[in-house]
Length: 262
Image 1 (cartoon, helix red, strand yellow):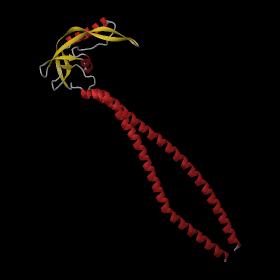
Image 2 (cartoon, rainbow, N blue to C red):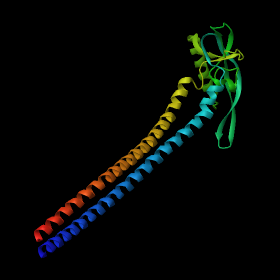
Image 3 (cartoon, rainbow, N blue to C red):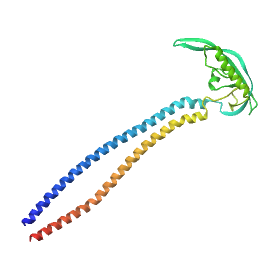
Image 4 (cartoon, helix red, strand yellow):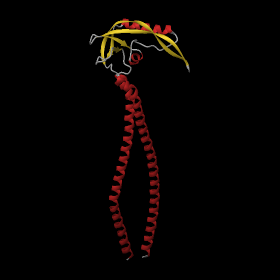
């Protein structure tokens, strides 16, 4: 009986020591897991913030491009392309302009007005040629509006060089109004289709990148939650079996100790 009691006390102290060691190891594991979860949580928050910032920047870029380039492109009536034949070009007048000479200083100058007439090959109509939408809005009578400068000779030289180039290139690509409400055609558009597509490419990439970052973080969080739920279900399924086996082993040891004592 004393031997059985001694062995039982030794087994009890050993099991308590094992339980203490297990609790310490489990405590360290829980602490390490909390640190890892905290670090992952901070990284996920930064990633979501980065994705939201990218989406916000892309929305701002879309807004700026929408009120500038896209609006100018959509409001333009010169949408169809055709070949034009240059009929004649020449300087018809001197136009007054003003330039800045300081913070609160403006002086006047003059630039030559180059007038160009072309024949639209698709319809045969004779129309006035303008360089782009800005030149047409500034002065529809003149093909090109040079930057106003103090040096009148320099502006005259620039316009004459343009006139000589038009005389050597009699066939040019031009843009016209298909409704035929405008009496002018354009040599080039201020914002063409290619420029619009290239300008919208970067905000689109930023929007897609921000959305992908947020989607990947949410997917990672869902998979982590799913793995935790699966692990919890497995632990709950194995716990009754482990406890039953432990009770069976303890009962066997107890019966064996009684038989030895007897």
